Structures are given as C-alpha cells and as structure tokens.
Image (tube, rainbow, N blue to C red; front, top):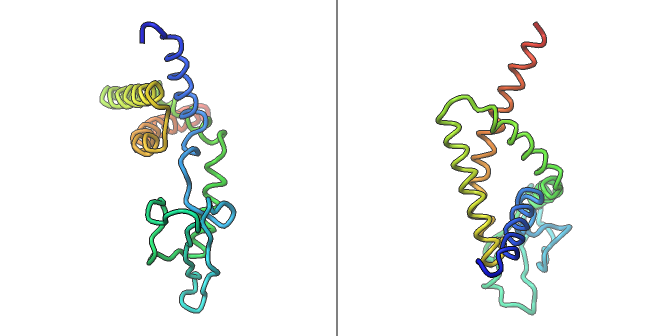
Length: 176
C-alpha cells in the first residue's frame, strides 16, 4: 500500500464512483426477452396458466448446472418476465441512483435523533469501507454488490425518510 498508494486511491475512488453513480445496474439481471443473457425462452403456454408459463433453455455450448439462472424444472411467467424488463429499464438509469443519493445526503444532515445519526453514519462508514476494500482487492464484483445492497437500502431508507420529513416541515412553515 505504501509503495503504490496513488494506484490504490484511484482503485478505491473508482469503486466508490461505480457504486454511488452507476448504482446496482452492474449486477447481472434476470434473463428477459429483450436481454436473454445467452438463454433462450420457449414460447409461453397460455393454456396451462393465464400468465403464460415458459421455460428458460440454457445455451447449448455451456454446462447448464453452472449457470446462475438454470433449473430444469423451473418455469417463468410471460408477464413476470415483462415486469422484470420494465424494472430493469427503470433501474438501469444512473440518474435514479444519483438522485436517490443526493436526497439521502440531504436527509443525512437533517437527522434529528442521536440514535439515527449514529446508525446512519455507521452504515455509511461500513458501506464506504467495504466498497473501498473491495475496490483495492479485486474490484467491485457482483458478489460484493449483492452483499452490500441491504446495507445501502437501509441507509437510503433512513436518510430519505429524514429528507422527506424535513421537506414536509419546511413546506408547512412556508404555507403559514
């Protein structure tokens, strides 16, 4: 670390920027009709279910049992896959994550109780240190993103709630 500290600082900054700007869109998504990620969907069968049951077929050139989304007995709903497509389109925009982080940052500084402040700053410290350490070692991989996602959303929920309370209080004062 001492001999090449600038390199490690750049790796930490890159991992933090990737997480807080790109959000969770680097996590491999569920296969959809628009982006099957190498899989193939069999035509939906609406006679079995009104939601249209379909199967996911793995690529022929790979061992299906090492793939993340393969189970030979599993079926998917046609409309369920369509809903996942819409969610992927919405959550893949960096603007969503940047806006959430800005509102959460505002809420972080508007927290009232000492317990909320300690909790939020502890979660933020854990998040930043975990992302930085992952960035230094191997880069921010999918498994690290999946592991840290609950901590991120707990922090967001605390801070966005605080920002919302502050906004409601401020608008009520202005209306009087």
